[in-house]
Length: 164
Image (cartoon, rainbow, N blue to C red; front, side, top):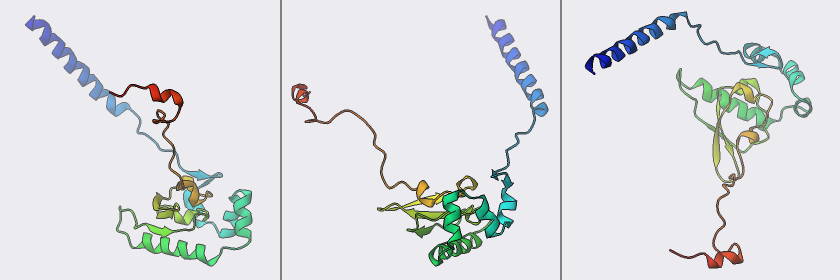
């Protein structure tokens, strides 16, 4: 019995060595680059506002064609300052806002926005996939229901449930 366990152990070690030898042949994992409507992130950041609005969907284009109001520009300036004042490798401080209808532009990427939900502020880290969406889409105003069992008094049949 002792010899058979040694052979198992030896075979495990051999398998482990084989696995180790295979690792260098594996390809490195490559991540796909983010593109918005076929344009890469670096190019999006360099685009002029007029060219950027052409890429947005109709509702967002219409909003930008009427001009960017002062309150939205103030939010973007606060986000710029928060990003500039953070040390490398850390998340910026959240900027609180009630402006749920703000359209996410490429300049906001990497910032943390605390969006008001009607009761409290939900912190949202702006990611490249959010470009063109509204901040409100990432801060729910309600708590999703968790459907469980009906409570006492829900129906007449619940009167006859024995109490333990």
